[in-house]
Length: 75
Image (cartoon, rainbow, N blue to C red):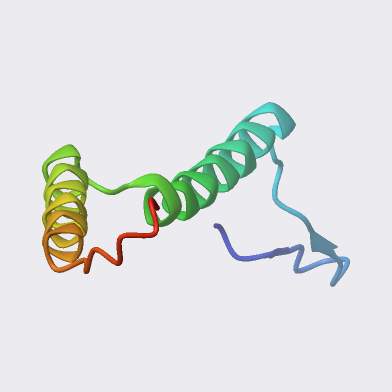
């Protein structure tokens, strides 16, 4: 942003002219980018990694079932 402008005669400061629509859109984009970053952390697991975790879980469950002892109780 531009520095504050000084009027040499009056020694008063003038603020920069700002387009409110552009500022509003910039803040919305910034907030959307932050929200997207949070969602990538929460929901950003790739499909291949989800499939791998599911396959590992199924394999572990199958191995556990194979080692189950039958007690003859009917359960």
